[in-house]
Length: 451
Image (cartoon, rainbow, N blue to C red; front, side):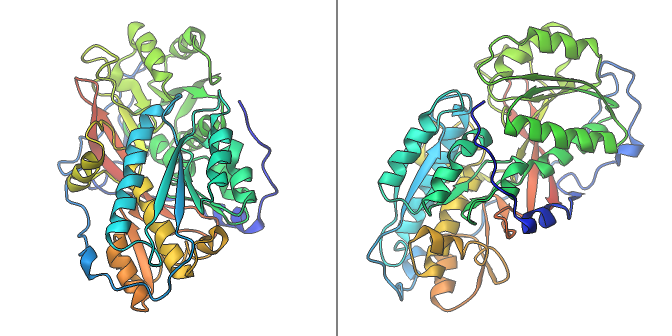
């Protein structure tokens, strides 16, 4: 894998990470503790997860403000805010590109409908991030920086972000990922210019590890992508599962670009785990049929955000029925989905659309608070607009408060957004989804956690 060396860690970041994670079950009204689970009799016989919440995925989005009532900017800028996006339209995470790009475009549309930032319309330039098998991200980043962007939203892949983070932050530009989850970024020397709306896999890993134990699994096998994303998530799932009394019986790695997975599958199946965690990207399209073809039940399979996707055109009906997956962020609400579909009627997935939309709003609001479209000035205000003031949930309502001299606390479509000094969300939802007979997934329950 292509990876740049990590910079010297900041002491404050290490201190923040050492606080730990507190988890609280929410949408399903609380679930049994790992210690009270049923006994697994091997080969997944004991897997019995809590029933999906009756209200999972329900509700409506936050109320929107009348864009026409937004007061004029008290400070105007000679340099309009220009945002770049570095999101996947090719490569192993290409399925995440459409919802993320739609979220960015919806955010830009709403910001400009409210009069833009500092009296000028905001523009966006989209570029493909590709994946770590190519050099597309570096080329795209060079092109975006050459066009004078103040912030770049992306990449989706933690491995891809590692190849460009020094290039972006070294240029004094904000890098704002809607989907990076590697814990490595918490301690990256980024000049305080790297931010994300997706929580670290310290949280997703703990939720999934605990959840599999809650489902009755006592032994776990894992097939893991050997990159920053895969091994980081593997580590946190393992720690949580073992802390809940479970045992890891197989851990098989593969590299980006591999196309044969029979060896990994055979070794995991030979260990006879109760549950199997697939920490992959689109390699799941090859791995799942190998698993189910050798007798693994779909209810034994647990996916992650890198592969929880629509497989209705890939597998025969019922292949994944009962399998589950986790995606950071709260469930996309129905009216938000309708707004996204108006942007891109072909959308099938909504993963990280809320995080991308929130990234646009937070960057725009931070520019207003800074009275500047310069990346280094925007970064100084991102934490401030996420905490401590009057609650608001979209650009129009938030910028109205700012222009009236009020402090704001932005909470968005991805859930509550409060940043640490390191640019990480300090609290977040992790959605748990269940696959249906047609190999599409539906919301099942949410877990809320704090870092």
